[in-house]
Length: 189
Image (cartoon, rainbow, N blue to C red; front, side):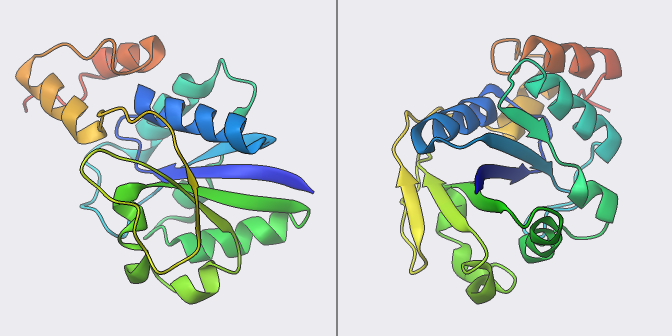
């Protein structure tokens, strides 16, 4: 059976922390691939200001040089709120020979009890938790923990830095940096 990691998020923008987490979990768990799942509308976050097409373009640009990574646009294509349960139903139907591992940071581990249909969801996949500064990996739900170095990078920090005119070149890939610059993303409006 194929083993695939899923890394969801708004990716507004995708940054080196996302890529590092995906690579480390792929390596440590021996996953065949990691699929990046850009959300159309994350249920637990404010609606993204950046158009979904641009976020897909940035994710594709960020992962293009890694043969273990691919983008799965299923949540953007489906529109509406991107509930993981709905996504997993579709992915399991499309890929019945695949065991999915959903990669989440410690901040999301602590909120698993609030996820839509969580009791059914834990039977559909394996949650993989990674540390994040300022959060503990505590939950009543089953989670496989992977201990990796914590990078304190977030998409909100990058948006804020761009808005202030601060450099972000070494926080995102060169290809993502070029898109942010060309499209004038996150600059004061």
